Image 1: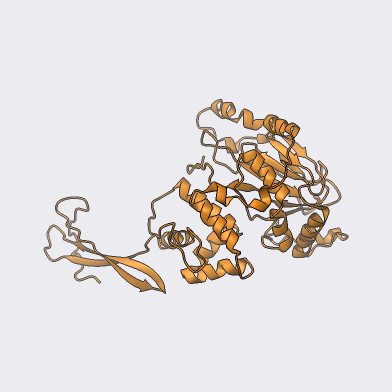
Image 2 (image 1 turned 180 degrees about the vertical axis):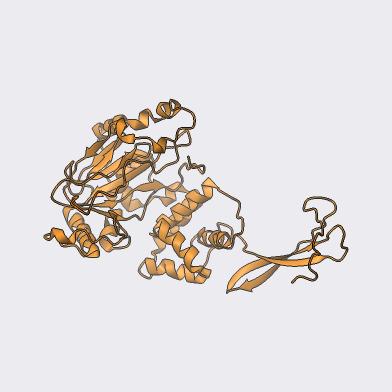
Length: 395
């Protein structure tokens, strides 16, 4: 409520002894959400009667505050997004906050982009947000998984490790690890059984409306001229994320057992033909190039046999060992992302169905044009621990 408008030309000092601000907080329901408003009394220098303005603010919940699901940090994630949507400053970039939110989202079996898009687009109440989370999980979330999530967000890495995943020997051999150190990538063979690959590939074909036997149907991409397939929650893809062998491989590289699978897309890269050229992604980085570049890994699972000329995953082997010196040697003002990264010596990586390629995030990487006769069908699949190093400055 504005008691009296400011006269034109009235002067105020926002941060001086001439301005008196009296703020007090009130609880109030707005659109079925708890919110706050601040009443501010502003005294213009040349006008004694105050101006009374009420501004609604969204409170940021604590990480330990839970709702019906009993999941830590979920209400905080929701409240921060609602505050940001309303244009309310919520403290600015915070690497630890971002990491906790991503661990939460992965633990709940959600995609990062779909979660943020839902919160921003739907502006749900917290009760409705929890219901959406349940719907994405088939109506229920097992208590053991909630306990793992809460342990991870409380800093208990031991309790956050799934016992059924860590049992068994290390899948990466000493030779594999030596190759990893030298080249910055490694291939985990037989990451999932053949039937898993067949089921996931079939799900992608069905989702796109493509027929493996009819090349004319391979170019009906749901996102237009793109190789990305936004298929996140199909049971066949979810099953691959539950692979104990994959979990243990990522655990070896990270040096800890509390791994969380990212919920990512599939990929369908058909052969090039007139009217369909390779749309990318070309060589790039998915990490900030602010130095030092932290350790991090990414992964791609071949669902069908993939030759080197079949749109194979491509990277610059060994570049993780020289990226720092390469960046230091660039002329001032040069944007490394705008350079011709193909001059660095990329190599396509062939593989069999069930092979998982894991690479260091410092490697320039991408897909490649498919010059073969069959599509390349893949699932993007990576894992991270509960806590990892993140650079809030994008460069």
